Image (cartoon, rainbow, N blue to C red; front, side, top):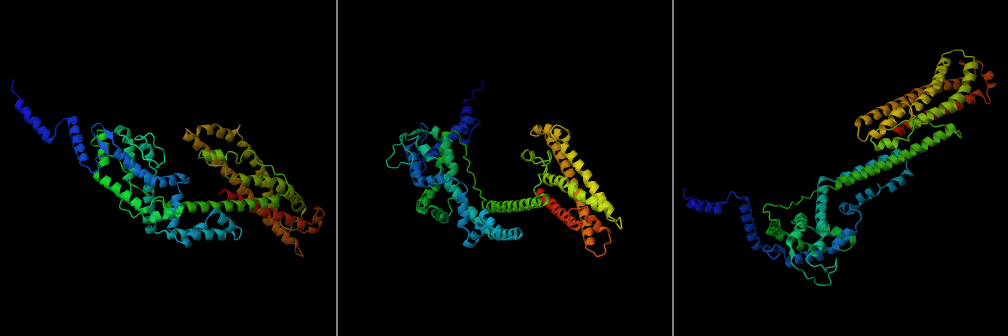
Length: 512
């Protein structure tokens, strides 16, 4: 057998100089080099590789940082609304006239304005103010405020780091926020601090070291009247942290503790976009406020029309085409029954006006009237009878939505399945959409009939005022069949038709 001792000697020498194919050997060599590099660092008293220990010098650094940032830490912890500081930065960056515009866009101010000016004018004024407010925030101003927020985010994250939790591992007798006594730190198994150290690096190295902190600290001072940390002290902390980062000491310690020469602690890049969401929030709040005002105005208008139209009559509502299921539909992302209000009032109108007042009017004017021409008589008769037939169809439609028959039963059966079955949701959407189309068809067709009858009655009223009527020749005879003069009766019905058409228009607007 050939003697390979000389070959192995040169092979080992080559591997020691230029690396080898042994991963474990490479890893040990790299860790050894990292340990040497750390030992030459300015901050080599933080960690002892022999024994894998974090030393009191590191605890002393953390204690000094903890003591310095503690006032700021308590300030940040005391703030319950996390968006408060974002508002603070924005408000500190806008002049008084722009702040006054923002103040005028609160719900309280808009509601106050609504008591003084018409809603249409209010909407125009609010939109103009929002436009002026938005235009103030140019790209440069937005960038400036967003950069301030990046500084604040980094500052807050550093100050609220749990220094006490880490220090407690070095001195179990340490009390939180108590700096009256000198702590006695002991060395600690470094493995217990690995995760804490990684968290600290990810936070501390996110600080924009080259930033000018003057403006931010002025803003923070305006919040409490005093600086949570003096600007000079914070600059010294930033300089210290920058020095430690440049030395790579903490990053080397992490590699040595974890016995992983390739481990890298991720440092998140700070992103900030607070101005545009803030403006959007104001826009949404004002839109909601205006929408609620419009809804209240329409509701008030609806109630007034209903009161004038039906008086004290007890209205019989629809039983199934109602808003009862709408909250469930909305929660499940399903289309809602949208014309319930209009259809309910249509049915009430047919019961209270068509079947009573217009029926009586029909018997007197159409049946007993001596018409010189049937040109208006026939359309009146047609519209009246069509309204009566629609009442039966509306009642049948409403009944079909009962939960124990027809469409209503299908919806009831499919509703529990919509969470896991999109086809069930699609079917319900189709059924509800079809119901809304039918409801709108009833409303549209019946309103056309009512308007047509109204136009005929208007012509009759105008004819009754003539010295020589041209439509009906026996006006005086008709008065005998009515408790009030037929002309007054005609006018009262015409007013109800006018109220009804306005009611339908308002209800349909509410449904949009």
